[in-house]
Length: 194
Image (cartoon, rainbow, N blue to C red; front, side, top):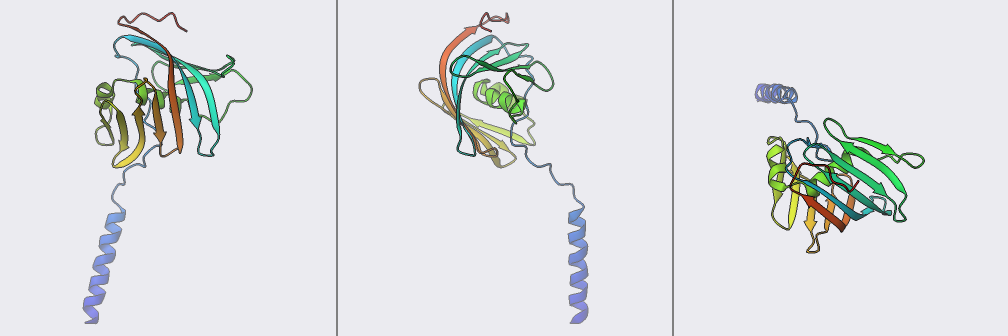
C-alpha cells in the first residue's frame, strides 16, 4: 500500500513539474495596443466633450478635437475654457504626446489612442486587424466589447445622439463622449480643422 502512495506521489510531482515548464500566455494588457493608421479610407475630424470618470472617483472634462486620415491620427485636448492641454500624433509605431501646460499627468498616450480607436474606428476593419489568438472584438450597431482571450477589457455603448460611453474594466475608468462637431471627407486630403 505504501509503495502505491509513494509511486502516485512521485507521478503527481513529475506531472506538476512538467506542467510548470509549459509556456504561459502573456498577461492581458489593460488596453488594446494602438493599431496602425495607414490604410484607413477617407478622413474625418470631430470635436467632442469628454468626461473622464477615473477609478479614484475624480471627474475631469475636456474638449478633444480629433483628425483621422489614412496617414495620421491627431488628437488635441483643451480644457473647457479653450486652453490647449496636449497634442498627440500617431503615424506609425508608438503615439507621441506633448503636454503643453505644467507637469504632464501620469497618462500613457497609448491609452488615448486605444480609446479613440475603439470608439471611432470602423468595427469590421478594427476586428480584422486584431491578433486572433489573443484579441476579439464583438460588436453590433449599439455596442462593442473588446476581449483579451476571454477577459473583457473594455466595452462601448453608443448613444442615439452620436455619443458613447466607454468603460475600461482593467483601468477602472469610464469615458462619456458627447459629440460637438463632425466633419467628414471622402478624400485622403488633410482636413482644415486642426
